[in-house]
Length: 234
Image 1: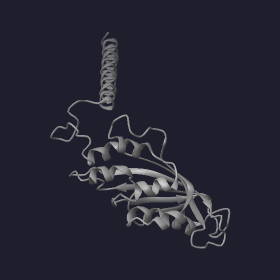
Image 2: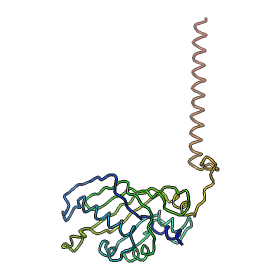
Image 3: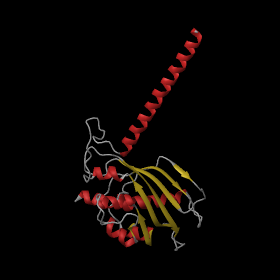
């Protein structure tokens, strides 16, 4: 089913980044510190493994054998709000082969890169998916991805100078579960929750405190004015 397939792995297509920032800029080609071109290569590999027809060869030449992927957002999508099968806090994929087995069955999903940064050994993405599931109208999903890399042990490999070793990703899984049809919100015609949630109750409580404070302030001000007026009259 497409909805199940969409839930397995959410990092899925790629567009040009609107911003680039070198957190620790170095010239490309330095063995111990990646440059902008190296970071872009990592981003392109990530994109191609997700956005195109799955390429097992690319996965094997761009990832370390002990590749790990951590995402409670993905785990929660797989679980569809249930306690299992995935355990929150644990790796979604614990090896390159697990990633290959899981991702090779998935279709592409729109995924726009909003920002892209890098350090000497990691690449960081801020992304948004406008249509991550089959439910319409879709709720946009925004998230962050950090990719830790290591230099390729094969120093003569100019095509893949850096390898993806670990991915950390989190995103708005609530919106994604809604887009997948796993969660149906109870909304008013205005698009707000019918039943106040914790955040709404907290806001209402704050509003009540602010209102009471304003009333007390007004009463105090009126009392002061009355006292002044009485003093002047006498």
